[in-house]
Length: 108
Length: 113
Figure (spheres, chains in turn blue, brown):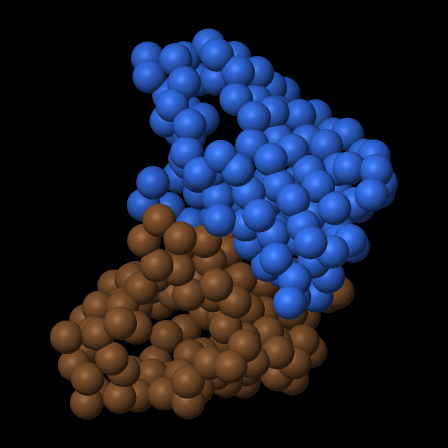
């Protein structure tokens, strides 16, 4: 069945450093979504990418969808302590499958 | 209203109990979902309802029984659960077939004793 792999599993950064998480699928995705889950919270939708090669920005966050629509990345520039949490990619069509997530720790 | 409301927020139940989790949304979304999330793991899909019809059941044990009374409500009936069923149960909604991502509720933290 469809699998969505996400790396790294966790990352520790100093505040102000950049952070990137990567997502890879074994099959071509119709779209990919990104979510953020704060500790003790629930997943919050960040963005959806649909087109091959698409790049979208939200302030310090940059999202990319690969040309083959099998991989994606989320890059955060100059991390802040408010960025702490787990970032999930989620791929597929009607049946959305979540990657394992990347836990981001930010040291002030 | 851009929220998905889940009740209760916390639930402790014995293995012989019957309880129900409730979920409500008023965003006009026509797809609703139940996910199960264990600590430090991603959400795991359980059920999908589209236009009030069950469209996906991810081989979930029969001790979990979903119900969608109308387009705004989603229930999950629990019976004879096991301690390993303890988890955060998340409800989500979206516009099918997947318009703009899922809106999740804050979840019900379930403990089975």
